[in-house]
Length: 336
Image 1 (cartoon, helix red, strand yellow):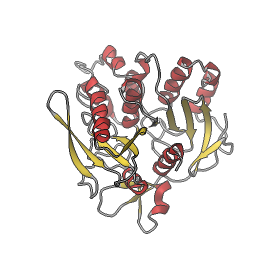
Image 2: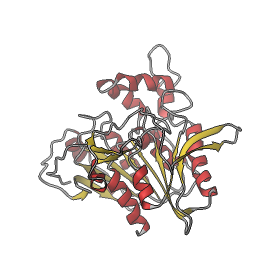
Image 3: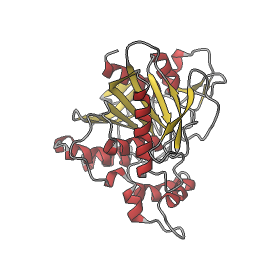
Image 4: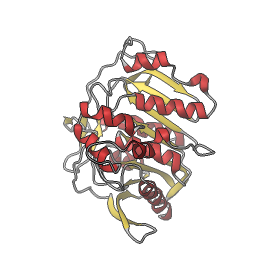
């Protein structure tokens, strides 16, 4: 385990009146625009600019799911990024990845996936997984997608949904990038009131809980940490957590560490699991921030494990996703 000295402020670039926000590490792409803090559970709902279009995706039950979609320019098939909204958001939510994917010339879709996580239909119900799969199929049907290069990305509640899709999607996905995810609703129910009591109320609403008492069995059924693992795990999942999350942010990094350990163990990589001593040191931030093992963009990495199919990075930051790094990482996997 190692540590980092970079302690940069978290800021973002607002893109004019478009309604999009780009993370601070992407600000060099738009140097003339002023910096603003990006809220990682923003409920903001603005009209998206062209060429992003609102689409309706058919479901098996004859209903439809709304999404925002961008088709890659005509020519050779291009990768697809499925960007998942956060806990309280929906498909209209500002997405800092969107303008970067447009700039890359890739396909993009931002599905509704049952909207905010405050109803039984949300919170990783079967309907949520079906909606994500339907969104991927919609993009594939448009004919411009390189089916070997589909990526699913999410932060916070979107990271939570990404974990669920990783375990249950019917599609072959090149890689999942899950940032500061929730993996255990049972634990988060008790942790959330210290940051925002509404999150605890949302969990109650999702889990058929009565009189303020959590339905623990239902919370476990909606928690990827407790889900049965498929016989064959998907190709790649990358897990990212900011060392300060749970202190300055809403999701303790134990959610990321515990999910990583479970997958690493299932893959037979016990030697790469995070030890109890290392986990305690990271959770309490009892680290020397002058020591690092690498960087994510301009952020130092304090702890990193990589088994091949699953990786874990604990970086210098909080409850956030690094947009420019995420796009650069995906482009690197494609070979661009």
